[in-house]
Length: 152
Image (tube, rainbow, N blue to C red):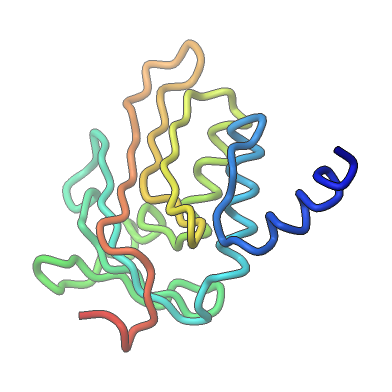
């Protein structure tokens, strides 16, 4: 039994998947660590936002990230740039982790579905805060992150 316990952490490092964690926040952090290990320096992904949003606030939007900075946001259907005042509602993948983390800490009901090979949160659904009348907010990654040359 000691041998199994000693080998467990070593063997788990051989796979890029993340097993179940004790809490949603621990699971979020584990997938965030996996994303940090696997993320390209430059990537493009497409995200769709679901909420009672202002016009233009749903997407889908192609987000280009260079290093840690979002450098471009364009509506996928029209290729028009996202207006500056709406830019922050279409975050980087790291921003999706931040939204989920902040919502969990605030005590909101949060559901996240991950890509278990890259760690990317493919869906983030945030329920209203305790005693709040807020709407449900959702993000869905419709085209996963890829290096720009790998995009179609």
